[in-house]
Length: 223
Image (cartoon, rainbow, N blue to C red):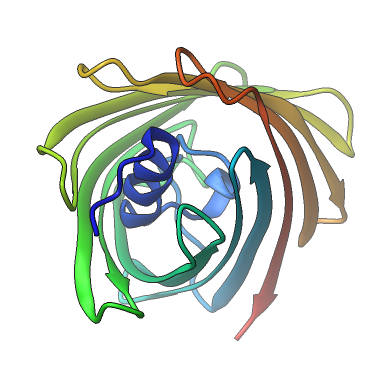
């Protein structure tokens, strides 16, 4: 079975690219990794017609790299469970400096059919426009291939706006040369430094299925 629903393909390629850290339930990743000695778990539930998605992505850093293993379950077009290992490395970490750049690699394994169904490479870059990092811009350029689809260049731009100590405004747009064009807009509520919750609304142009809603939960902790 190939993946024919455009939104599922977009989700699949984003999962393969090792999406983690500030990316969380967003598609556009940042150029930062989990600090040494720490791990994180990012999770989200996404509802859209005709399906629902549940994803859990634990990640830890070791030897200067971030390793993740995502699990996603889709309810339609048929019950699908994917395991998505990922690797992320930054040449300059935007989490500790004002700008950063890196790369991530990933793939997805369909547990029901017992085979690899997608792979992706992404080059994330991030820049903060002030010393307090109240406005941060992220850009991604990559390549991905899902089963039954031709390989394609992918890209996106995302932004974080700090509203106060607890709230951030999140926005992003992403797409590919084959007509996929989508975006998300929402809020992130932080509870201290290690816990946050995301609420996002998204839409893909020309899909004809209406918007989707995402609720994300992110937790960081020491190993």
